[in-house]
Every structure is written in C-alpha cells, then in structure tokens.
Length: 66
Image 1 (cartoon, rainbow, N blue to C red):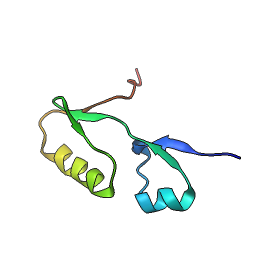
Image 2: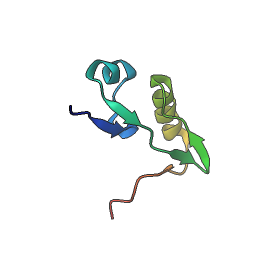
Image 3: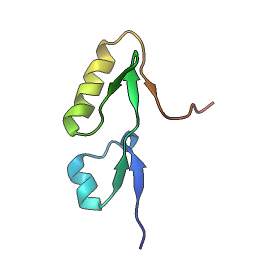
C-alpha cells in the first residue's frame, strides 16, 4: 500500500486532503518568534492576511534552499 505525505506548504484544503487520503504534517512558521498555526483552512487564510501586514518575513522549520 502506498501513502502520500506532504507538509502544509502543499496548500491542500482539509476537504481535499481527506478526499485524496493524503497525510499532512505542519510546517512550523513564526513571525518574530510567535508560532502561526497551519491546521485549518482559516489558519491558512489568516497567515496570508498577516503576511501582507507584517514588516518582516516569517521564518519556518524548513531548510533554506541555499
């Protein structure tokens, strides 16, 4: 049996995750040391709203591409 696992960076809605049977692991994102949840569709919308307003970009638990 094959399972697909990705992180919240894949931007699947909760309904789509369930429909496809995909397992999602959260990426830890923080603004100035304050963790931002990425659990619900509303969390994702709130993240993008905050991203537009913040002066500094958030940091994540992902490795830098460089």
